[in-house]
Image (cartoon, rainbow, N blue to C red; front, side, top):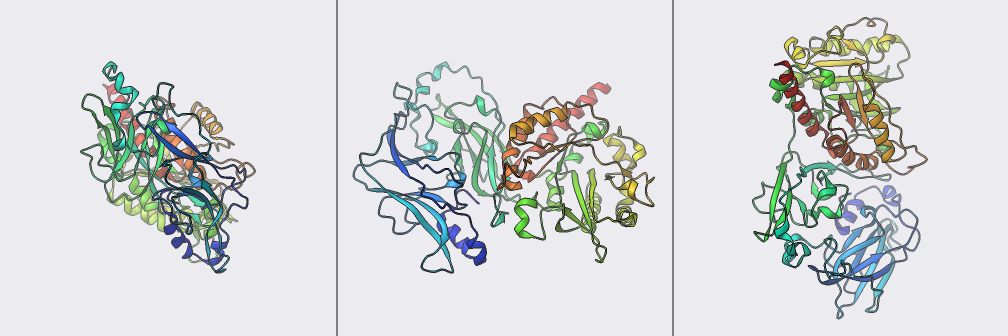
Length: 571
C-alpha cells in the first residue's frame, strides 16, 4: 500500500474487491488508548506541536490510521488536510504531527480501523475505535531543544522551504565549516507492500536511498524529481525527507514506479554563504539492458567467476496460479522480460512437470505453480540473445514431479533444441573469460542439477553443474549479515552465488510475507555491497523483489573497476 494514499481513495479501491476479501482484512480488536500531548520545538521551528501516542501491544489492522480534526469528526475523511497517518507504516507508536497548537481551535484525534459497516452489512468502512477531544491543559512533553533554545533535529514534516535557516545553531558556526563533504551517492529503488488478505501490491513506489547515513549534516535533505533539477526546491511536492531523521539511509515516497519516465534522486545541503539550499548530488533512475555490452572493452579479459552478476531468487515467481498464496510464494513483481531489460543476468529456476499437458514444463515455487512456462522463457532468452550481446546464466536447480529420467530427457531436449547454438560448453572450464564467450558466440550458460538423473544427457558438454550456494537461514537481519559474511569469506572454486534473501522460520515471523522481508533486507544489501563488501569478491548475488535494491548498478561499477584492474595487470 502506498503510504501517502488517502483513506477515501483506499476505501474506494477496497470496495472494488470481493466482499469476502473485504471481510477478511485484519483489524484492531481492542481500544488503542490514545494519548495526545504537546511539545515545544526550539529554533528554527519555535512552535508547539501536537504529539500522538497509543498504547496497544497487539498487531494493528492492515488499514488502521490515526487522524487529526479541527471539528467534530462526523466523517473519517474530514481530517485536517494531510493529517492522517497509516499505523502500519509507522516505526513507533508515537506520531510527531505538524499541527501547530492554537488555543482558539478545538482538536480531535481519532483512531480508525476497517471493518464491516454496521448499517450496510454488505460493505466495510473505516470505523473509529477511539476519538479523543484535545484540551488546552494536555500533558506537555519536555522541550525539543539543546538547552540553548535550538532544535536537536529537524521536524520530520516541516519542509526545507519553510525553515528559516538563519535561526539554526549551524548558522552561528557556518564560517568554521572545513568544506569536507562526504558523498552520499543518492539513488532510487522501487518497492511494494503485501497483505495476507490481498496479496502483493504491484503498484510499486519509488524509494529514496543514500549511502553513509551516519555521516550526514543535520539539515541535509533528499528528494525525488520528475525532471533534471535546476533548483533545490523543484522536487515533486511532499516527496522529500530530512536525511538526519532516517539513520538507515532509506525513505519511501508516494511516487508510482515507472521505468519509462525520467526520475532523479537529489541530495541537498544548505549553503550558508549563498543563504539557500543547493543541489549537491543528482542520480537518474534508468535501466541497464546492455550493461555487459557497454563494458565490453573493459571486461573482455575478466573471468566469468570474477564478475559480479546480478540475479533473482525464484526468478519466475512473479505470476502465481493461486493469488491467495502470493504473499508467501511470490518473490518478484517483474516479468522475466523486464528482468532481462533491467540488467538481471542470472536466473534461479525451479520446474514442475505436468505429464498430461501439451506444454509440460512450468516454473514453480515448491509445489505452488506459476503461470510461466519454461518454453516461453526459453524463447524469450533466445530473442534477447539475438537482439543483444549480453551473457545470461540459467540455473535449473529444483525439479518437482520428475518421476523418471524421461522427464529430464524431455526438458533437456527442449532446452538444447531452443538454445543449443548459444550454449557455452562445460569444457571451457570455470576460468572462461567473458571475451571467450563473446568470441565463440556462446552467451548462455545452462546449469542443470538433474543432469545425472537424465538417461541421455549425462555426458552433455552443454549442461553445467548447478551454481554453488548456501541457504542463509537466519532469524534476524543481523544473522543474515553474519551468514553472508561467512559465505563471502569461503574459498570458492568456479561460479558461486550469494543469496541475498531474508527467510526466518515461520514460528518467528508467522505473518510476514516475502515482500515484507525483502523490504527489510534490500536496503541493507545495497549498503553492505557498497561498504562492508566493497573489497570482497562476489560472483553472483540474488535477491527477492530486486527493484528494492541497487545491486545491478553496484555490480556494474564493480565490474568496470575489475575490468580496469585486469587491463592494468596485463600491461
